[in-house]
Image (cartoon, rainbow, N blue to C red; front, top):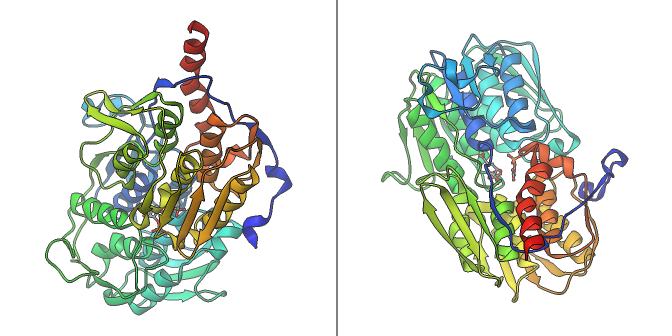
Length: 456
Ligand SMILES: O=C(O)C1=C[C@@H](OP(=O)(O)O)[C@@H](O)[C@H](O)C1
Ligand SMILES: C=C(OP(=O)(O)O)C(=O)O
């Protein structure tokens, strides 16, 4: 299976640092991948220029920006926020997005970014000309059928040589009818988000009805709806008294906005985990009081696993208790948190059952297989279930932790390395997908620990 293949170029080993004591650090986490890529798409489809402040600059977001540029959108990444119209949000980068007529021929490289491969085909259907979509080998294996079939039902012409997967060509005709569509989004919530994000520009808007058994990552669909509304779209949702599993977007102009991107709370996970694993304390500045990001659930999940947290003006402070408990939890809403939770669970004082995440087999890698193999490779006792993992903690030993081009596998290996000597994370550079500075941030977080340990 593809998750087992290792490319020689990726064989570099990163010695994951062990924590000599309790961490005590403040870690500023860059912007959310999910918010940045939605912000870029919505701004590109707007009727006037907009700003995106403190965007995430990582492989996934740069691929999104590059793809939109290829279609004709202007994105100035170098603008500092001081020259932005309302500089009151402070320093940091601000991107200026200037919408333009979308046109092909063009080729979009999706890398292995779910947000790019799912959110952009509907945008391409609005463009004039053929848009070819291609990406990393893994992108060919990730589900796309809901987007392709959905777009066809709404009037798009698509050549998908591999039936429901990449590579493919969307033959944009300058507009799309839109209307009613049924899709099965049980393999990815991003199918729903994709069809909703571009829908204000469809002639009839859209009514998306999910007809599958399960629907993962609901907070990400709520994020899509929230951001559409902020951009001026009218959206009817199941939460607002509508039918279950049905979303409607009315056609209309999207407005250029001045949006500040929240820190990526899923990327905050390894740092919070460090507080839990070492019985220390980590503060993440700018943790939003209200958010649709699934990472917000870490406040509850990690508290149940053995700590406490406090949200103050300084941010979110998580304090470990020195004990790590197992957890029995349905992670279907917050699937992307699974690798980090599994890593902590492998170090706990009792068993864990992680449920509701069968769809992780089709993420960056087969995450259930990869976590099982790698934790067991260090002496752990993990078994795959039909929809998750059963983790029985055991004393672990050092060894190579393979990452299969999955950023969250790399951070999971780093978490285990805090407590287990001799863990070597293969291809830690894969964290560049969403957090290019991860190794430096990790070492910086541990810096004060070393100082504390020396003082003690
Ligand atoms: O819409 C989004 O930004 C995301 C939705 C989720 O995808 P799935 O529903 O495919 O799990 C999540 O895992 C991914 O990291 C980001
Ligand atoms: C599943 C993830 O990414 P993608 O957006 O590529 O689906 C993830 O970041 O955990």
